[in-house]
Length: 513
Image (cartoon, rainbow, N blue to C red):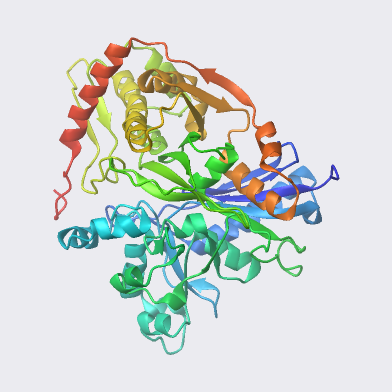
């Protein structure tokens, strides 16, 4: 293996786009990041401009390579990882979307989900997809776009009804990975992990489900081809005449949380990781079995390598964790996220204050799209330090909710949790998490495991790495945190957390007040 070749990873996240280049030992060689605009047309609605995301992608790839002195020809492969469920429809004739992308956090289709619940279709959907019926997933977003996107925005001289054009196979639908693969290679492809998050894909039959397509009135011709996450046949190559100026195979794609599972080398049944980003996503590898959850978790596809069986996972999706810290900044309780540890340490406890950051509803294991953010237990003596500490504790409590559900579903007792994401740089939070969950926490040296996982998938596909054992050898611990608190006291506080959660449930009514 030549020293001078690398693998690149496009990490397209909720708040921005990152490009990273990794060497054979899994170390970062180049890194560039660009934020994009968060668009809030109405309360509970969240959109992104896909063209802005594409322009930012080109910008960060170009800048990272230039700053590191890496030529595009030195890239043996590109991997893609992406914010999951975020959905768009585009016109391949113009290469432009028909509407902004609807972000995974978007709640505009909550009424449609409640129709499904009223029609007793929740279990039917769960059986096929492993997912809860929720506005979080792509199916209701695609349905909304087909019904509501404005054809005038399509810049055609004779705009037709969007549904007619979709039926005629003139439009393309996808999640952000599909959009980037299309822009990079011209091909309409997704991987198994992203397909499994659409609520349109049967994870047991491993195909788009005709009955679900009928339910949501999504024409099959809109949908991408589904491929393994690490694909020896590749999804295509970049155009030598394009912005990169080189032909580089795009060979790996995973939704961001599955990419983190792969990057944390959770290749074996029972391996688990939690990623603390805008939200937190706790995944446990369950091997070749799709374990059904009785405790509000999702059954999802963990990853698939070319020619190998699918590896399934259980997932607990927590919608708001890192975003709760951003909220503290938004309302001027902190100036910088780095302050949170010092402020939280400055008080012995929250003084009875609990924050439930249900800004966009609650995910696993509660699944209440009408829950809303709540602060309880305040007195005249409550200071910002108590609220900051309670916000950090809410991240740890939500994670324990999921951990307990996961152990109950899988029958596997977890004695170690691998963690990654921006918030785990906070040592106070990591120790708090260890105490509240009563489990050892392991933080790796390379904490950008989402990008690393997609690089690993792409690199394995093209032979840059030969075996997953090489990847296991790359994984190095930065620091471990062990429980160091009174277990009974933690259990008591956890019980009070559930009292606070109860008060947040079903708060958002039609009419907004």
